[in-house]
Amino acid sequence: MTARNSIIPVFVPHLGCPNDCVFCNQRRISGHIEPATAQTVKNAIEEAAALTPSGTKRQLAFYGGSFTAIPEAQQLELFEAAQPYLAEGVISSVRLSTRPDAIDAAVLKRLKKYGVAVVELGAQSMCDQVLELSGRGHDSAAVENASKLIKAAGLDLILQMMTGLPGDTDESCIESAKKIIALEPDGVRIYPTVIVRDTVLCDMWRTGTYREHTVEDAVRICAKIVPLFNEAGIPIIRMGLNPTEELSGGDALGGAYHPALGELVFSRIMLQKARELLAEVKPESRVVLGVSRSDVSKMIGQHRCNVKALMSELSLAELKIHEASVKSGEIRIVSLD
Image (tube, rainbow, N blue to C red; front, top):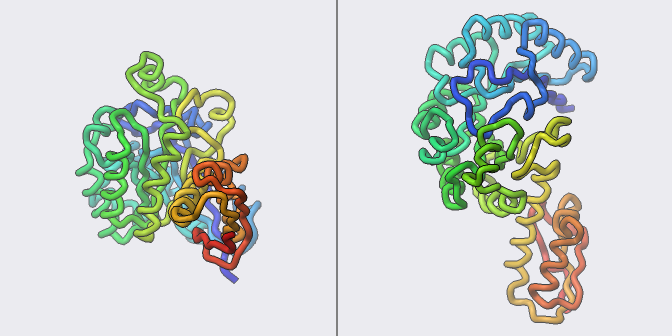
């Protein structure tokens, strides 16, 4: 039997970050404000160990986006707290998220010493103009350099990208995705921009210097870039911010915040595939499409939006979606009259 996997998150919000990116307010995004301590690490691990079955493969995760930029003494405090649990096999490894400009050979040597197996880099964009307008404080070359160093050190590399940042276009997002693919990460996270309360981006939006990246904008562009990652065999770990009490309670003032954004994107991709498949179907036809069990709801669409769109665009008399013996993501015409 394959061991279950479990992530034990410890948030290190804003600590060590030399920049205030226009979109960022880690406290409101993560729901955490207190700095992590050795006791925070111990409590998180022991709580997870008590709640998960024996044999679970647990990984401690330091999130917050700038771990290797916090003072080294604080890094060591957090790492040291995890060492007994690593030695005893309570946790299998450590992962962390950080900035591209906070990675070098010395840093990676320290990470490997303390059991880090995965490094997530906040690339956000591979367009230098977008990075500058977003206040990132680094360029795309820093992402490329850090990515190569991480892979050369034998660590897994996860890259995060955003869509809808200041200066972004569909074309720049697609180009960023292609450049990220070229770096051969072990996975990616895609975070369409959300306008969070008490951020520079919020001020820009209110003054009209930033145009909101809506849920529809995010679905449209993600439906273009997700297939690129799929074709390259790069897993997409997540799309969209994790819903939190703070964001759902009013701190997300606008932008692409939706608790089921990934589902909307995959539904749009299924719609695009169905359009291509049915392009030559005559008006007033009666069609039954077959998809895998996991894809039935995606093909139908939220509030039957995909079925309605296809019937309207193609002037179909009837369109039904049935479960069929096909691979996930595939669509087959079961019957056509």
